[in-house]
Length: 198
Picture 1 (spheres, rainbow, N blue to C red):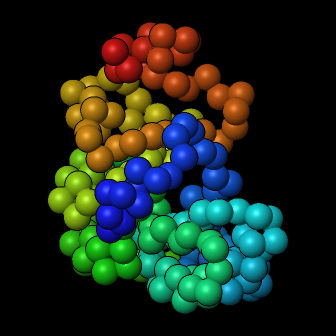
Picture 2 (cartoon, rainbow, N blue to C red):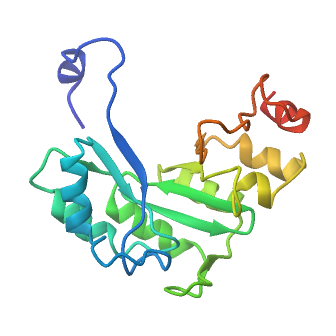
């Protein structure tokens, strides 16, 4: 942790970073067929693209996180330990402050079919958020408007859905496309999503 004087010496105002916080790797994510998507190759590509921050978020797996951290150790690239969980309510991107915290988190959730096309997290999204919060992590709902996304898997406006949307560990939603109408804001065309946002 930086001393207060170091933090206060930083420039004021917003600073923007180029980031990709949803990357899958070969072998760790069943749907990645490109054998070149290794941790070292991902780091090289991220640096070539002038990214500042990345996260390997394989489906229900964390095996590629440590090699990615190692591959980026001598670079400017910040690697955030992460995972994408295939929960019963939809996909959830989870980010942790350290590899150790990610390993602890992974050990506390129930994963079935590890390493297969049927890999899935049997722990509810709300419980995943609770454990994330306990371990100082945070989450983003993944591709909410597509198949296996939160809106498709959890339609309507149930109290359980609102529990997820209002959880303090949930910090954002990921959209597959900028043209998506899902926003949970006053401009969302769906009255149930507008109500959930309120």
